[in-house]
Image (cartoon, rainbow, N blue to C red; front, side, top):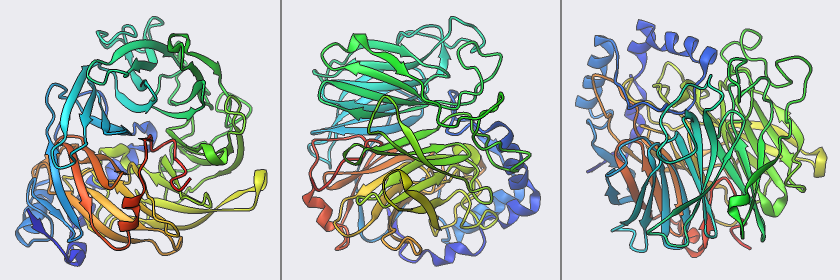
Length: 500
């Protein structure tokens, strides 16, 4: 393990060869036409890169501009406490949720529960085999929720893949009882239109509302018909989760014709994904507010009536955003950070050829009051270290680090690693810490790296697609006050009031 305390030398060279060979240009031309954000069901397959790109990677490693293959590097204020490799579930690691002394880690083959009472030595409590990408995960009380966004033969955990063109195929939400963490029990399944790519909880005392994000309809898919410009709302009674059911499908992008009212995408807006639903939603239950990252659009909406969310404002960025992927509010709810998942999470976009404003975060201030609030763009943030053209890298899942008076965030960047940054000044965001591994491969592009990196009760937890579950300790006077904040539960897409 080494420290790279001066990343400035890494800004010189990487990405030049790819731009010359046209590899990157071909990639970015192809992606918007069939945007498939987040890696798919299959095992990671290495995609070849040119000999020139391979030589560039080798030279950058030799010169110390990037870490060596699988080498761990980090800033001086980060300590790598633990890594737990994948075991029974070999698929892609995905999202994380937390409750008490437990971390819940999604995986395309199911989910894993860790006891994190000793962060330096997490212990596996349970591994549940239940295939169905991408197994986006969250918890509330004794219930665990799992998204299935791949066409399956049925709703069971023994299901097999089945063509989406078959009416009998199933996609949607699964619900487990986790009152016994060592023995989760599958208690309910709810089919939803176009499946469930991600989901967001709006918890209440008696019920849990689940906002289901899905997209990419097709006239040939019986259960995923266009325009599909909305979200499924599921109501789950806590006392009888087996009665969970869809109670509404609010249309967020109303419009005439088969394409609805969202971003039309290409060719009207070249390089931008057409809006056919939402990728992810983040809610602030204490503020009755939500932000949606919806392919070609970012939206702000009210959830005063959780069964009937109401759009307040809608924005687009047809210059630098290809795919609106996720959203994070600051604590005061006067800012939103939206991420652009350029290349769908499987491309090398953290290099000189792409630059600092694409595949980045977009920081928006929320101005005005009530239903007159507007999203106003301020700046972009992207990690300041260029990555190799064999490393998939783009803005991905992160969370707030709760410090009063400051807007601090930790965020995953796939093979770009984990970045801690300050956006207190919306127009001048700055990185303050980082952790990353060197390329999974130096000969081809193989999907890997941190899918989710979240701050929970004094530590950063990262779910690495290929390498497993990581625990990091951040020691910095700017972030240390957050160690005094302890939560009983954290689903990052259901942001808590950290100081209530």
